[in-house]
Image 1 (tube, one colour):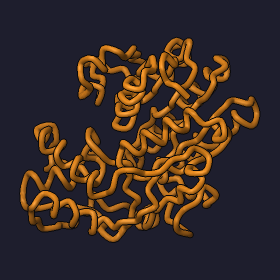
Image 2: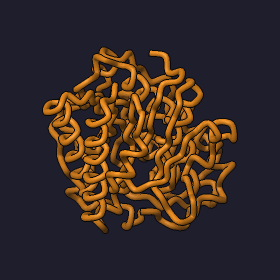
Image 3: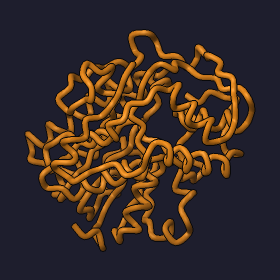
Image 4: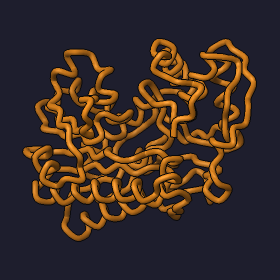
Length: 329
């Protein structure tokens, strides 16, 4: 599908993945409306990192998706909607489960309801690998049981099922994209890779939670490619598709790769604030991407090592924006 002049809305465009997706769509020629959460500072989040020409090409809506009328106005005229808006902090969901669940469910329901009215070509809804919980089989296929091991995960299981219900009940052309552990430039220190890089650049001590857990770290460029392929694919309508690499790496090994790339040494210090409750910890994640390959032609292109290098370079250039001494929830 040619993206030229395609009318596209990206919700959550001020976030990490959302800003990269909005940028890629503009460069592909799409007419992009970027929906960001309103705040009194006029802060558009990670969209501030876009070059001036790309940013000028965006039509920015600053709203709260809990307001269905504002959501309707933002989605007016759209052909394809990528819904990435969500509260994504797992630690935050422990502290404020009601807020995390209500925000994620209500905003998604409003987007779905407006999309149903609008007669879209496609709605791409964002899931997360966290819905799988600790792997019962590896690699993890889309048919793996869903396990709500945190309030955040529970909220995303709910929005996944509500989204699919709109496909089954109302024939809304929904594709559910389930990204695994995306990392890259612009990601906040709430995530493990930027937290480790920022601490390593700032000193000789790295505060960390569990180092034995494994993740399928996927560079943001590959995740964005997966989203765009989902937006193009008729075969993926009504389907759930994993976006990852199929490579499982422990946190300890990831830290070693980061330090090696930076040419630094650091002492690892276990920080109990960064350790999940025992039954909530997701011990292993690794994507089976066979379905995404079959339906959409998706293949990861950026190696973990190359992605870590690019991310380290970006954080090094923007280190003043990170506060390595503070644990961001």
